[in-house]
Amino acid sequence: MNILTLNCGSSSIKYKLFDMPKERVIARGQAERIGRADSILHHEIEGKAPFTGEQSLSGHREAIERLLNHLIGPEGGILNSVRDIVAVGHRFVHGGEFFRSSVAIDPGVRETLEACRNLAPLHNPHNLTGIDVCTELIPHAPQVAVFDTAFHQTMPDHAFTCAIPYRFYEENRIRKYGFHGTSHRYVSSRASELLGKGREEWRIVTCHLGNGSSLCAVRDGKSCDTTMGFTPLSGVVMGTRCGDIDPALPAHLVEALNIPLAEVMSILNHESGVLGISGLSPDFRDLESAADGGHARARLALTVYAYSIARGIASLIPAIGGLDALVFTAGIGENSPRMRARICAFLAWLGVELDAQGNEGGVPEIDVSRSGSPVRVLVIPTDEERLIARDTVSVLGYDGEMSTGERQRLSPEAVGR
Ligand code: ADP
Image 1: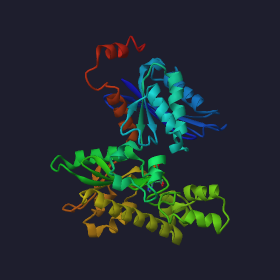
Image 2: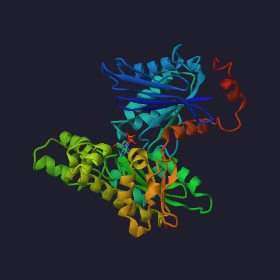
Image 3: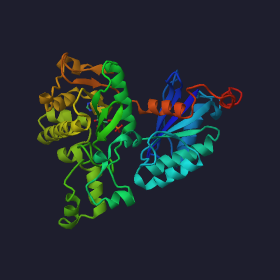
Image 4: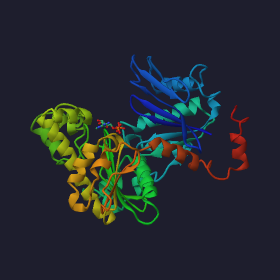
């Protein structure tokens, strides 16, 4: 059965079409620069030449419409009709305290999702648009929301409570939520599988190191603490985000340096992190080659980042009572042996011992620790879409025995094949 996964951002939409339960990706692609005259559409469809085209996309509706047309169209298409899409799974960034797991979207759930809109004003409104556009364009297909925050809802209150007056939690739900939950859930569960069934309670810290970076302490498959907080600005140092800083600093920038608050927030979100320190780039490949060429602030930025991640890892250990394994994932975690080595060098005292040759590996899903290292170190490519597709199937009950009604509804005749 074909399951479409959608990740709707402010100016981009990424999609994958899965053949489930085989988990085979039969099409993938993205629309970028939505809302501009020079939007880019990119599609890769199994067995066909990749397609990249520039065309104006006025908004998300048009982008999803074009994407569907491409999947169905006579040239690049792989589907006979839109009815070949059995269900749609959406990445939904912030589900607040309302959602502890993925959920099928019905009118009641849609209303609750609306109540979450302002929890993540940069993300949730676009996720909601994606849902509404699919309701209009793929009306027969049930939809599921898979939340970045849901995995972290198992954190105990001592981990998620902010030390500000408690009324802000009671009245305004201000607390630590955490993000990247789908990625942390995917790689921690994969790590437990790879580490084997011998230990029931693997104590794992997962390191999602991409443009946004966060760490998560996982015990027995559950998130016990994480580094991001009320927003994805906090926690470890990132590409352009500052991570944890003195909370009085924004007020100082406003009051002492007369920078408007909106500009301060933009600086902390878009001009800080390794970009801010290096003055060069948020891209770690650029920083590595500049550092190799003697650029002192690129070198400083890389070390600040590595130290911040190592501190973050150490800070999470009380949440899980020890450390059996570290998992590196996302763009930097998967692709930068040098950054992994820098981070692990700060953690040698903890029993983190890398195998220098293995760490260069370049193989997906690899144990890069020295044999006998007290802490295993794994590199596992993240696959949030796969988890979204799996959740979509299981939340809708399509993975178990289907009821007669469901079987009829999903029969080839019913879905128009
Ligand atoms: P996103 O959070 O947008 O999904 P990714 O997980 O794709 O981001 O990670 C993007 C980051 O990965 C970029 O900062 C890029 O510098 C980094 N990256 C990708 N490949 C490499 C590499 N070979 N070496 C170092 N960093 C890399």
